[in-house]
Amino acid sequence: MKPGPNQALPFRQAQGPECTAGQRTAPDCHAGCSSHLRPCSHRASLLPSLSLRAFARSTVRATLIFLSIFAAAYICSAADPTVETRGRQLTAEQAKDALLRFIRANRATFIGNPDPDKLAAIPVKPGTDGYFWLGAFRLDLSNHKYSADIGFEGPEPYHYYGSFVERDGTWTAEPPSFQRFHRLPGKLK
Image (tube, rainbow, N blue to C red; front, side, top):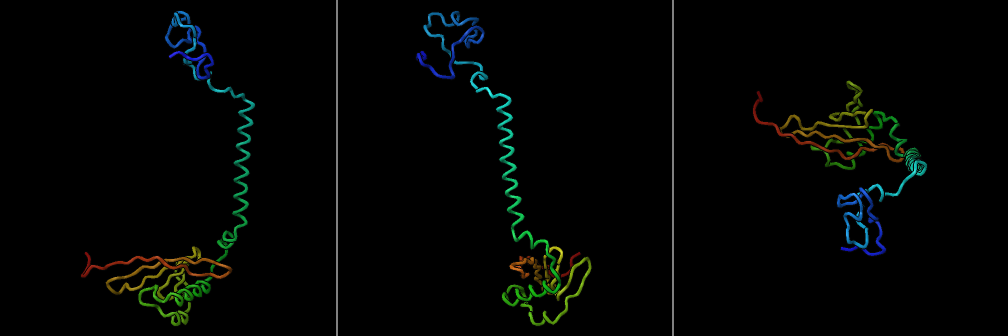
């Protein structure tokens, strides 16, 4: 294939040791060829040269863009109202009220249907390791969590675990997840 007279990059005139045919000069390797244009074997000549000053400017520009985006994200997260509520402390009475409101609104959530009126009459008792107890419910105030083990006397006990979330200044109990266990008949050795 003969290249045209206005051949564009990546072709250039072959000279001396750059000839792709491995000869010393273009006339030696391309004898009888009217045009000495051949594909270039040096990729470096095809890349635009980037000066150190242009490279530094592009690096500084990219760094400034990155820092601007990071600062905007930090400022937006600082203004987020949900971030403020994470630092507020949940008290035992607030946890009890939130859990009782949840049980009243969702009577069939827990197996055995615990009576919220009976639970309201029970005082919250401090337990070990900073936990509090409200009947079968264990309240972890520092982590805003609750759990309950219900039905462990029977063949199918349930373990419930959920969390407390503050919305509009009021603590609410989130719907729990649960695990259902099966006991094997007889004694395990």
